[in-house]
Length: 351
Image (cartoon, rainbow, N blue to C red; front, side, top):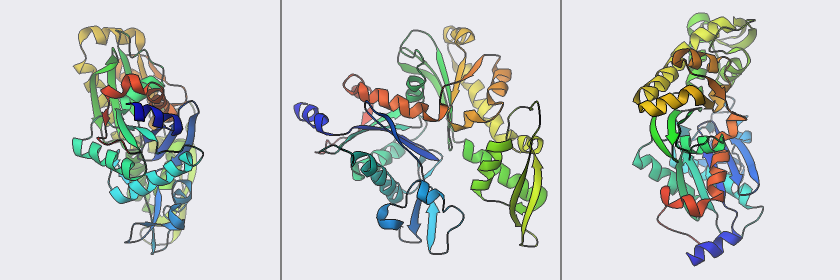
């Protein structure tokens, strides 16, 4: 205990929102200091990170879909969990060095937010990756709890607070009360599935093949979950699957909304399933307290409207929804001595 307290004075402890699409890092008393895509560029077949181990984040994202045969730009997390252990370790190591290089004499303690629905093996993989990447001690917190705290919901009060965190790989839905989760659901559907739905639609309807970056742009610029007051159009370019030649087409927000129907329906079903599991008194609280949504998927036009129509409850998008979970990990860092016994953590305490 004494060694841990002394070490804490000389380390730059950090909270990490380890997302499928984006990783955010915050430092105690400083807020968010790093916001990078969860992408790594490696030599194909070797897992050797390019650029002396620094081709990570924005640098690697710009390579997506544009690499030669000798290089792969990959996302080492899939559906909110680690799919490539070595590359995730390299990515975390790079991010920790970027942040910890500013100060700190000993290895940092790290709080990492993880999806509530992942297995014990997947949780162990996150802890091992962070330790090997340079963390002294690793604590895991469920994303819904971190999101609720980051959104400044009254989760410690004897009243229901409901959060819907729509990330890149997962959607987390939880009802919280008295500083714990009363009921929750987690599905491996999120923003990436919406991008995939756009890709499949254009391939099926127009014989046009586009990359994931282009699909994300379409989703952001004209995508919606509910009808718009003024429907939008957009030019999109890709490769014709029949001729093999480049081609550009004009698409509408109506057809993209139809393409997004399936992943959005899965999210709505998860929200209603969580509400059905709630105790009657907690369900009653939500009539007044409403539902709060966060994560990148919450920014899709009309997402709050379709959720409100499906549940009959007021739905609010939290302030700065992309950084909500990261802000929650920062609060855990500031109160680590109070919260640490409630979090899963690594067995070792490396100096």
